[in-house]
Length: 183
Length: 310
Image (cartoon, rainbow over all chains, first blue to last red; front, side, top):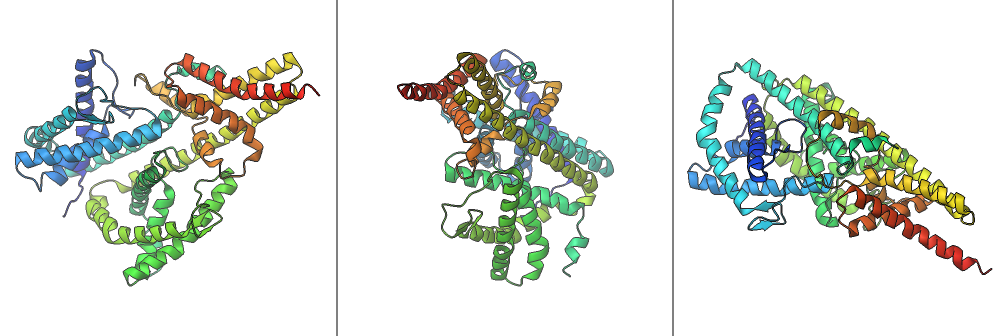
């Protein structure tokens, strides 16, 4: 297995994280009928989508060429990723960023059938529809600029990780922030 | 040859350090979670990384691997180097923060609860896994970093990140201990002034206030929405009061915290009460701590009543 992370992979990660965030906003707005901010991070990106997309593109697609096998393996990997992320975020920060308790065939409210199927479809959409276009755009950027952009993306995500970790561990969830200063 | 790794202490090394600190945190999170049947943030810092694993991994990859000629040698070198390191870090963290971060007192063959045979063997195995599986993969994955990322910028970011986290985490712990000591004083005052009704009322209010402050930040509640803007998020960094209380509470069973015991009991009563009811609103939170503290104080009242006949 020879996988090498390049500067364009980091950009793909970032682009799909942003697209995932946009998708979440639209999808949840349609379901809930109201716009709400999504994601653990402060910025407009959901890294879990970025990870999912890069895993599909770099790890799964090279070995499972046919659409059906890609679909099945992507479902398995993304469901495991979603489950573990959910355990970690709930345990550490005591919030559930997603809850499928009411959905058909869910496990512990952390994963559910329909969303897993959706991941499979998204994997296909990424590999066959979006990626050809996105990779063309990304690769048209000069290598030097890609390196700079990839570095910036990593720095932004690292800093956001710290800010978000600290703010969520405060647990001011059901208390307004101003009330914290009244003592 | 031995000095070579130090000459190479480059930005690349710092990136590896960070990667292994994160991997270590993930291992610790799931390993301890499965063993304790409860997943909790491990370690001292806010972010998802344990620097001790990063440091250990660098030690193994850059110094122990070049020294050892066989897998068996590496296994024993890792045990011989990492065990004292764990003991020393455990001891130092206890001295600095007055609490325990890991405790093997119940394990066979432990030394002061800071190291134990099972974990040392696990370190040896992790060393082998690192050198023969994980590190080759990571090296191959990242390849020649400079051609792909600006490694210096990333290394500086990592250092700044961990430094800020370290300062904020220490401050958070300090504040937690400060509030606990204050709570202890109020509880003592309450017991001393049981006869005087007015005083008792005042002290009771103080205790309530203190428990409210402590518990407000000690346990996170489910967020009703995620609409938190930048200003609130950044402001919240200034009020990182008491998330570390959870770590203190966990540690209190094994550590000599007798002085703070009444305060910790009050807090634990609060948490038990809170676990019973699924706290959803600010109102509920207020009721919960009120119940907990009334219970605690109620016991004291009963004690006072039983003493009165004399």
